[in-house]
Length: 95
Length: 150
Image 1 (tube, chains in turn purple, brown):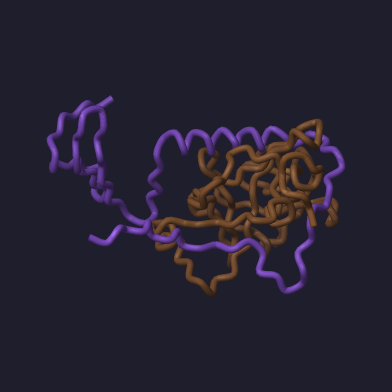
Image 2 (tube, helix red, strand yellow):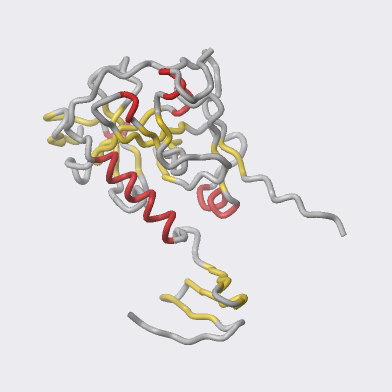
C-alpha cells in the first residue's frame, strides 16, 4: 500500500481526475474532500461493504426454492409508486 | 436478435434486447453491466434481477411500496446530478431481498434501492432517515411490530 503523509490543505491525485484534499485534522478525525468525475462513485467503506454483503446475501437465493410470497398492498392505479427526492438540506440556525 | 442465457433458476431464457437494463456502474460490490428483470410467475411480487453477462448472478428484488407503506428514497446532491434525475423523471424503485425458508426471516435492503428508468439502472444509497439494511420484508403483512396493513 502506498503510504503518503499530507498536511491540512494538501491534496493527493488519483489518476488524472480524482483529487483528495485534507480539509481538517482534529484529534483522531480527518475530514477529506473528494473531487472526482461524475462517473466515479465514492462511498464510505463501511457503507459500501454492508451493501456489497447484502447484495451477495440476496444473490445466494439464485436457484433456491422460495415459499409462497404474500402480495402485500397493491398500488392504486395511477399511483406514482415510491417517491425519489433530493435530500432536503439540513436546516441551518440563523445567526 | 434475442440474447440467450442459461439461468440456474429459469433454465434456457431468451431475452428481448429491448428489455435489457444497462447498469453503467453495476451493482455495488457485484458488478455486472447488463441485467434483465425475469419472472416465471407474473403474479409473484418478487422478480429476479438477472445478470446477462454472468448468468449465475441473480438477485430477488421487489417493489418496496407493497411492503413498506411509508418507504421513500432520498438522494444526495451528488447522486441526483450524477444520475441526471429531475422531479419529472418517472423512476421504478426496487429493493433487494434476502430470502429465507420462513417468510418472517425475509429481509429487504431499504438503504440501497435500485432505481430503473429509460432502460438504465443504478443502485444508490438512500439518505432517507430510518432505513434499515435488513428490514423484515413481511412485517406489515404478517402483523408483528410493523404498522398494521390497512
